[in-house]
Image 1 (tube, rainbow over the protein chains, first blue to last red):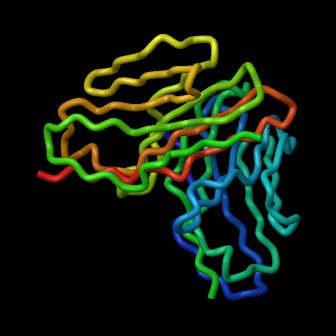
Image 2 (image 1 turned 30 degrees about the vertical axis):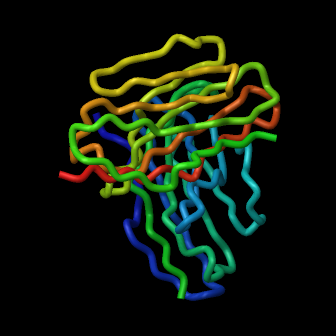
Length: 113
Length: 115
């Protein structure tokens, strides 16, 4: 069974640009989560989508946004990139329900110069 | 407020030694879930265990064991007879069932198993 996939693997952008990151969940999973893993800060919860709707978001500015498509894949968009947005962005999926464990993808390394 | 503390930033042990990774959590909710994840050098987090707040039974899976104690708000993870392949960053996470429903990860413990 295929795991969570993310694309691209690496992304280099300049300050002020927009970045789009993509995630495909495990088949059968309807929930998708996004996390930011910046150096020294651990994993910070960004967004949670389920059944096409945003269910919750972490303490990030509105320029971090996303969506979930009918096939449960998801996009994370980061507008007006800042240098401190440089991080590993991890996507995870789970079955519907808050008590299920999450399965993570390999991540997208975003570098903002 | 919810919080997960992994006080050990980095641990090094010699192969075959036992090692315990500490996790202390804070939550006001009575219903919550705790998780442990492993992040090897490849970067992809691997799910290890889930435990709900009503189940304080300790769990053993091969060389891994978990000790959940609500009285001390701790969910510690022990690796017995460590191996070099256990080298990774280990994260403890908390998710409660209240309306806020945030998912909180600790900052992780980097474990080095020395041959």
